[in-house]
Length: 82
Image 1 (tube, rainbow, N blue to C red):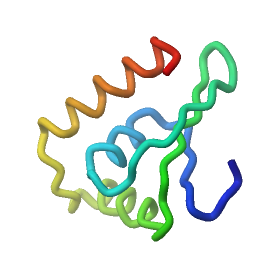
Image 2 (image 1 turned 90 degrees about the vertical axis):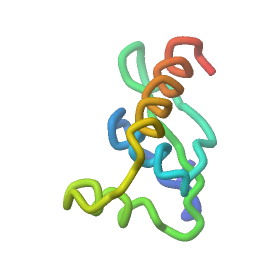
Image 3 (image 1 turned 90 degrees about the horizontal axis):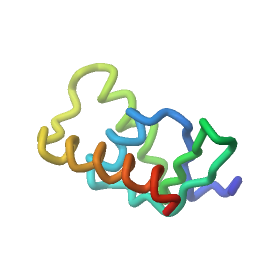
Image 4 (image 1 turned 180 degrees about the horizontal axis):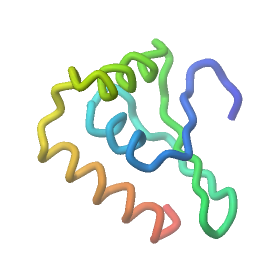
């Protein structure tokens, strides 16, 4: 998927932050190999770079419960092939 309205990353924890933000829905997982998965988010407004910057600047205010739920959801989806 090389569309402008999606954001792709192989970084698990950045994907957790994006999902936990509640602003970008996860639309697909693309398995690259046995060890690598690409996470694909719907991002028609190009919000991913802002969310990631806020994460690295430590200004992102994501409730810890949202982050834990995102981690669990992504791990489940990776291991169940969903």
